[in-house]
Image (cartoon, rainbow, N blue to C red; front, side, top):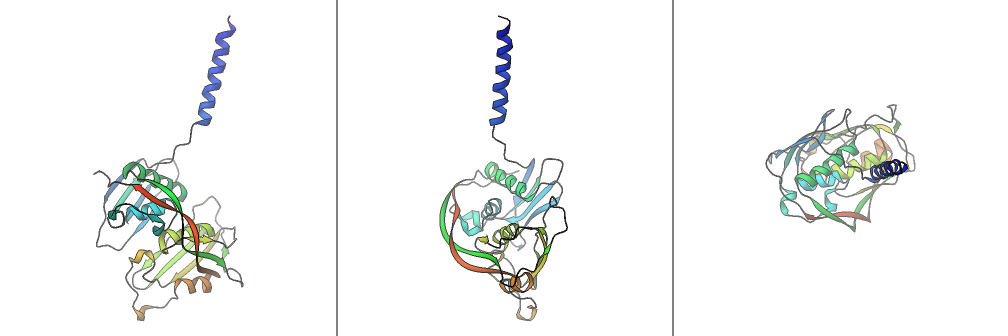
Length: 264
């Protein structure tokens, strides 16, 4: 009879251990997030880590937030009320943990914020849409292998010189990350990485933007200020890469419901 309690304890511990193993991992979330109206008179739109534990987004619409969070261009986010593509928000959030989160972790936190604060629900549908294929020219790429440790954060931040050019000093970046940045921030359609390049690279890219890029939010470049090629030419000349237009099926996000966030 004395064995029964011992057996019960062992079984209880085993069941408890199994429950812990099967418990789904929680999606990362910001510890605190402040959401305020953006400035409709400003053309600036940027999302980045301001410090090791502070993430900010400036002048982002909900459509652009969803696109960034789920690694899609805005045109692949469909449905929802009109205000998701016009109302601007500024967000300042604190990230958890002891170290700065990687970009993928930041986007998971943005997904949680969209769910919790904007009550976003959606489903995915395959849609055939215009896309760009990123590939290598026959002459080969003009990229330098990065000397940074693979564990260090990639740097892919476009610097805007209004009315002049865009400068991208990319560091420790994969081609997949580069394609994702192009489709999230610069271009109006998905960018599919077909380069078959598997390394991490350092490179510099400079080009003259047009009104199809950055959501049409940049001021036009006067003819007398044009000193850099367009993006497609710059990719070929400076990086040995090519963007080609075609059509392909992508998993678009179709918004089922969304709400404006409550006051902080």
